Structure formats: C-alpha cells, structure tokens
Length: 141
Image 1 (cartoon, one colour):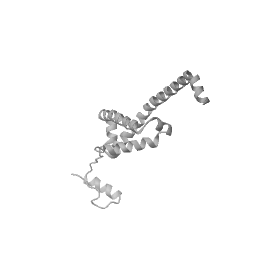
Image 2 (tube, one colour; image 1 turned 60 degrees about the horizontal axis):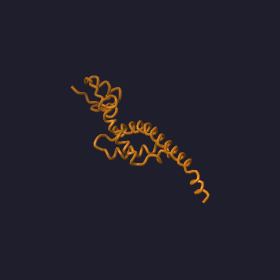
Image 3 (cartoon, one colour; image 1 turned 60 degrees about the vertical axis):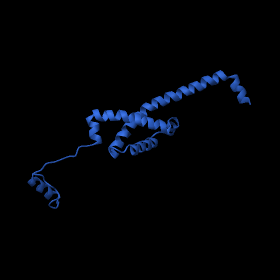
Image 4 (cartoon, helix red, strand yellow; image 1 turned 120 degrees about the vertical axis):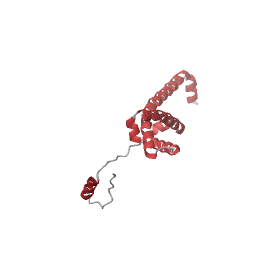
C-alpha cells in the first residue's frame, strides 16, 4: 500500500525515470544492432561458403544458431528471434551486393580450382619424388 501511495505522490519522477530507462534500452539496442550487423555479415558469408547456393532455410537456421551462441544473454533479452531473422535478411541483401562487387569476397565464397599443367616428364618426376604409383598423377597433353 505504501508503494502505491509513493508512486501516486511521485508519479512525475517515476515517469521521468521510466522514460530514461526506455531511452537507454533504445540506444543500447541501436548501438548493438550495428555490431550485430557486422557479425551477421561475417556469419552469412561463412554460411554461403559452407552450404552453397539453394540452401536458404538451412543457412538461415545455421546463422540464427551461430548468432545465438555468440551474443550475450542481455542481448537475447533485447532482440527476439524475429528481430534476429529480420536482421539476417537485411544483412543478406547487403552481403549479396558486396559479393557481386567485391572479387575477393566472391573468391572466398567460391574459390576457383587450382589447375597446374605439367608435361608427362614433369608428372613422372613428381610421382617419383612422392613415391606415387603410376597413373596417380595424370598429365594432360
């Protein structure tokens, strides 16, 4: 009963304190969103490299799982599962643009195979050094 009387007597101070706390939560959430976006960019890129194209739901589940393993418990209170999924989708759009314009990231996701051309003599020499059986190293004409 005393608490209710105190709240009614000091309603203006209580309102200011609640507004201040809400402002702090909003600022923390905004600041953490920037950090989370950077982490999500890395995780989305890693998922693309690991799972490849055409596996959208699997990649979304993997990135959601990875981010929930990495963020502190306090942030789990600030960001719901739907918030995280929206952020992943938003970061994915940015990441696709970056993958298309940055050759280094594209090469990271899908590295080009290394092809070495050898003469038959060079292939035989390498096979001998490796103690490989004939036919293991295939030379192209």
